[in-house]
Length: 122
Length: 375
Image (cartoon, rainbow over all chains, first blue to last red; front, side, top):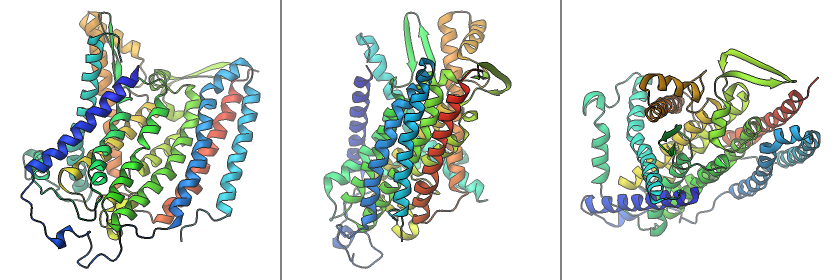
């Protein structure tokens, strides 16, 4: 069972990372901090915006579209693994036609998305 | 893991070794990147510390360690510290799943030369490596700096956009091999080119039986998408220094910065390993099969145990050579191509690569179906 291995290395790497941070903290040079140094990085002027600065809604839209299309792609994976098997079982024609219909819907979605200018960055 | 305590111990040691291999590759790659850029740009690069500047890595590590530990006031402390630690995870977990040499048979034990074997290898690796977007967002939001946040948003939007082309380009590959398992894929690429079409067996001794000859378009799309996934030039909009200082790691320094580096180079290594596995025969030596190499090794050392060890070592060297070749291409491209503009980048991902990957899927499906018919 690989799950034990995955958990083991995940914990190991996390501990390794924490030890690195600790080492950096212990061995790091002496602290010298003042208000200017602690301010957010900016080119010599006070930072104009807070961190909850306004960002383009396009990022949000891209993420939503990604989820839609990614799920559609994941649906193709099990089909792709068993396609050759289905051909040798004699159900290849049905499998091919079914997937082509699915891809047609996919293409329609992509086409509609491009036409509605959801992907224009200006 | 295994049944007995012995196997569990072996598996743990193996995983740690894979992780150490990955971490140890980072300074070498940084050196290669700096020397390589010097070579390409007709200048020296680091050449003062040690022979060929090789000790520069040690000097850098010491310098990173002794830098002042610093957290900006506006930062969310937990996220700011957690991000570099979690940056290590996706690369390590994914790299452990890539087979690096033929299994070592010693007595009644069989050791796989990889961290762990996962039946659904591709799905696991894709799922794990897309977690990198979270690390970037944690760093960007946790820094409390607008440059970091914008860099993180750009990086994550770019990562998920190219994830689509990446995932879709692999559908054709999976169709060819009919499996998710990376080891089975490598076995399918053994020897010289040979395939079934229209009921005939077609073979050619000119070309090795590599995936790239069956899926050239998928190989190009996959490789281009991995550049975007690992935020490398020409897709490094996340840290376009002319606009965003350094992107999501603007506020980071010292060892925290180094952990991000390890994460990024880990991504490159996963991408290179996958390129080799899917399209270039994995650990196989071109034109030969694993069995042939084993027989050759048996002729040299005699005992089956040592022959297995020798063939594993030879295969590992082959895998490593392929890995190094792709890593060099990563570095080479960085100093060759200029950076895209952000809208060009998104257009390339959504309007060019995604349709081409879709076309590749359709063509592969039709061709696989057509050549399976007998006349």
